[in-house]
Image (cartoon, rainbow, N blue to C red; front, side, top):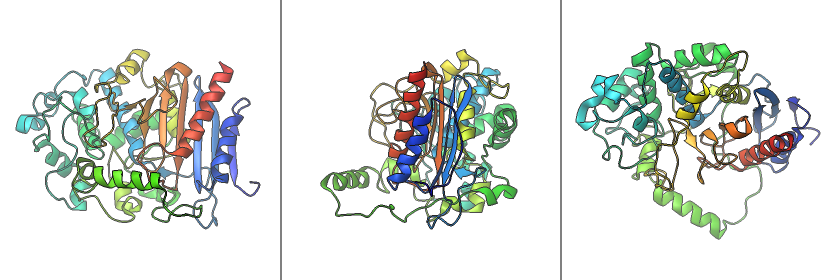
Length: 399
C-alpha cells in the first residue's frame, strides 16, 4: 500500500483506525475518503486517503469537500435542537403553531417531535414536480404544507428521505428568520471553525470531489450469488418506483437522473436532508461539540442533547418506507439493527453510498466518514463499519 496517498494525523493509541483505512483500500472498496474521530472532545484521528478520480490521476486533497446525502440530516437536526434550546421551538408544540399554513388537510396537531421522527406521513409530494420547483424553497415548502398526510399522523413512521429537510428547515426559518443553510453556517460551522454547507457557495465548487456512480466495484465480479439475488429481489420488491420507499427516494419520480447530485444547481440549492457538502473532520467536530467544547464552543447542553437523542418511534416498529424497523430521535437516526453505529446510545445519521457521522456519549466518541465512491446501499456500508469498529476498539482500550 506504499503508493496510496495518505495524509493527516493519528494520535498514539488510535492506530487501529489508520489500519482500517488501509484495509478498506486493500480490499478494493475505496477510491478516496476522509475519516475523523474525536474522543473526549479531542481530535485524535484526521486522515485523508486515496484519489479524487477512479483513474487515480489526482489525489484526494486534504481540503476536499464531499456531498454526503442523508448524513446532512444530522446537521439539520442539530440546528433544530439549537432552536429548541434557545426557546424558539418546542418539540411538543404543533408544527402549525410556528407555521400556520402547515395545518391544512388535518395536519394541525402534528407535533415538532412527530415531524422530526418521520411520523408526519409527508414522505413524498403528491404531484410530479420539475427540478426548478424542487430547488425553489418557497415552492417545495408550500407544496408540503398543502398536502394531506399519507397516513394518520402518529400511527406509523416512514423515512422522509428528501422532505424531512424542507420540513425541518422551514421550521428554523419561521422561528429564527434565517434559512437553514445560513443558520448552519453562522451558528454551527463558523463557530466551530469547520466547513458544512447546505447551499454550497459557487466559489467553492472546485473543491468538491465528484461522486463516482454507476461504474461498478473495483473488484472483478463473478456470477450473482443466491444471497445477492435474494437481496436484489427484495430491494426491487420494496423499493420499486410505486412503493412508499421508492416514492420517498425519488419524490414520486420527480427526483431522478444520472449525475443529478453532481450538478451545480443542486449543490447550490438548500436541500437540508440530502445535499450537505462537508468533510469528515467537520462532521466529527459537530458531533463532538454536542458533548464537549470544540474550539471553545459546545453546541448543546447535556440535557438538550439527551432530549434531542430521545427515541420517538416505537421499538421494532417497521419503517413504512424502508420496510425494516428503524429508530428515530429528534431528526437523528438512533442506534438499531438498521443503523448500529458502535452500539446503544449512538445517535447520528448515515447517508446514501456510505457516509456516516454520529456521537456515542457513553464512549465520548464522535465519528465522521465521507467518500467519493458510492456503494449500492442506503446504510450498512462495510467500509464505514470497519472504521467505526476500529474507533470503538481504540476508545475502549484507552478508557
